[in-house]
Amino acid sequence: MMNDRIIKEKRKIGLRLFGVMLVVALIFLLAACGGGNSSGGSGNSGSGSRDNDVTGDAHTAFTAAMMQIMDDGAELADEGYFVQAQSHYAFSASSLSSLRYAIEYILWLKGEGESIKDVTEGSINAGWDEIAAVCYASPYPYYFEGVLWEIQGEDEKADFYYGAALLNPTFPDEDIIFYYLRNIEVKDLYKLRDELRETESEVYSLLMLGSATLPRDVLCYDPEYLVTGMQEAVLEENYALAYEYAKTVVLVDPYTADYYSHAAACALLCGDMEGVALYIDNGLFVDPEHEGINAVYGILLDSIGVE
Image (cartoon, rainbow, N blue to C red):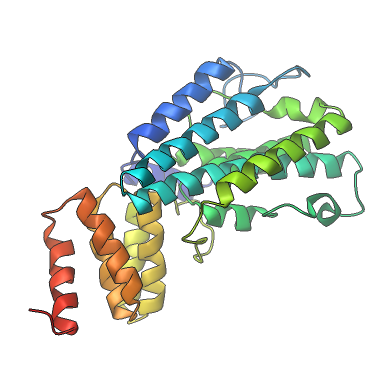
């Protein structure tokens, strides 16, 4: 059962789409998986029963969808939309890492390695907090953590993490199935893990903005939550923290010009001139006439003595 805080915030917050291209890719995922029974059989995670089909291949469609998101990011990069491209890369990377880490954890549950570290050795990211910080817009660190708790018979914990994933507007409206992963043979899990590592390496090689440094929270996907955190930090004159919130909100929603003006202003407060230029430049791609971005641009020019 989702806790009261999540339910309250879900009612309060107007959920936002990450971007049209991302939604199209997730629709592709659903079409490939075919919808049906959710992996969550006992609570808020879905309405169907657990899927025991050893031949399930949702992971194939999932990987293809995330690679499509990466390709969409590459197209944006070619058009000069650097931050928007980075958002796509980060979403793909975090989501793929979530699936790969879930597979590694299942391997450990099957008796592989003395500790989970033995199974994850050589992987780019290991641990839900680390993976989630790559892109708080992705619901999949929460979703796959829910799958693992359900596999272990911890239905209450599974429901919490499924619920957190369902809050995120990028999570598909239709049920998806990954519970079957527990039935895959060890040798095939290793093969799948290794394939995912190769795919991850391709995506991570494109990431240039780094992971978020904000603590993981079920609402870190939501721009309003992040902007509120930024505003509170500014009032406390904690400009470094405000900048972290501002940078995160841009990566969560790279299509809203207001967030670029926030990030550029915070970068200026922190003396990060490269950051100021980055967020002004990319923000003007989104809205060349945006007052806030142009105001920060004017302040920047004044600060360096340019009329």
